[in-house]
Length: 375
Image (tube, rainbow, N blue to C red; front, side):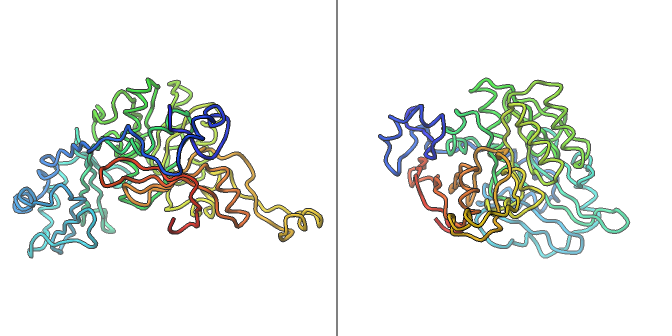
């Protein structure tokens, strides 16, 4: 634990106060590895594609950066790569209905959310249907088991506090959840249960992917039932940690609060890129304590130098930490309660900036003023 104290205070930090005073405003975590280990099962992914696309991508020097392949009826197939804007056409010939049918036969059954997978892998296939229910487009996304991201927040796991991740699609939130499941179950010896609505964390099939380690996985029949499976997991399986991806409804937010109040550590992701998105979202604001309008008395308003009607947090946040994943290797860490209160008062909270240096080590910059945009 030496050298990993959370900079925002609190009981856990007071216990390590002598260590905290020795830390500079910027320091590196020595646990960071010099590289990441990636397992993408790319050969299984390429098997569902037409033969000419398979051959081209197999010989593509950028195949390790492949994010997804788009196959829309009547249009040329397109590949998208990590770090590149837009996509690249893989051929001039348009995708046929026969090719779409062949691809569907090689993947698992599509669920109510129009998502399917390839058994034993982490790849995700999403369908676009016409008004008659026929598939006219496929988004084939490469799923990768990446070991190494956990170094960005390994120190925070020692506190046993709930953590919420926000960030744009494709920044790696699900990948981080998958590795956290493995580390918490195998290294921290926690009873971990994953609520896997689209089989995106644990992969397709009844046997979960080895990337989640010893964590258990509960599949969800329909996306609308995710909140019920969350409560079922707590009531039936006595987990110490619940991991859930894509918290997006009021029922799921309330389920998270119910789980947290039972003393279970929650690890989750939510729709939004920054903390302000969660504050302004009436459906999800309960995750950070909820927002209410309070009318102050004349003396209190003068003392605060504010208007009489102000916004305040109405309850403790469900998630103690909130992490904005700006990029895969550039994160902003909040202590949720303090950051929300400061933002509601129109002030900039103090946060941590976590990033990797040129040697791939994690560097933590402490006491950075947060303005909601750049840091």
